[in-house]
Image (cartoon, one colour):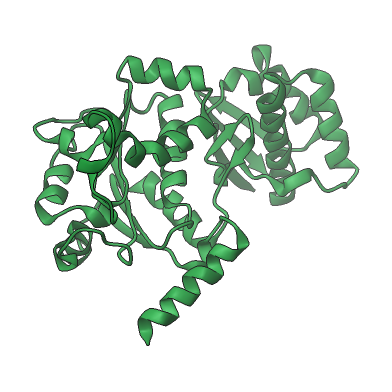
Length: 315
């Protein structure tokens, strides 16, 4: 007898359970296993084969809910018939690796390092994701934060970046300080808009439930019950990194992402990310996950570009 606990992320559990658990009871009628539902968790008990079948059905139910807002009994019966007939379900979705369901589909790890990254954030309060551009560090971090917020694990999401000049001068850019800093924060807005409706993002930011701000604005704050993401951390100084890490309050979690091959501060050896990597690696509750070109999920040429530049640096 095997068992598996599945946590529903980013969806109202009652849409999956059905009124008075009618959907779960229907599944139990068709498969020789037991299903227990509590909160946003489902426990499956039975043979591995049947657990895997029901896991796939639940995954397809969530995809259906994501696409049209609900699932009905006819939908479920069709999914059960497909599974029983032995036809392969689209996408081989398994719930324990799905981070978030959005209007555009599922967000889930797409490489072993990405999966280690995701699972590490479930076990540790501070996780560093270090690696080249395009490896999903920031995007997955935002998805993890949104899923945790939807599950009421945290009251706020705070996204921050150091406003460091990457070969350009802020002083010569047009506009006031806010307008000058906005471009540095655009990648964080882009990720959020992929995962939440634009109106929802606007509403949550106006209520300061979601904050997207330069790192300098974090000084003096204590962040309780918050999921905090520091992006582009390679461009922090030692003091800025220490300042950020000591903002973390009660019932909070932090993800720090960065690429130590793209440091824009004048003295690269003073990077707060490099120092943190060297002095914090043996502390319980803090984990470091390293990405490489094999994790790149952007255009297929990005991986080749990274390899080419790495080869140049070695010459």
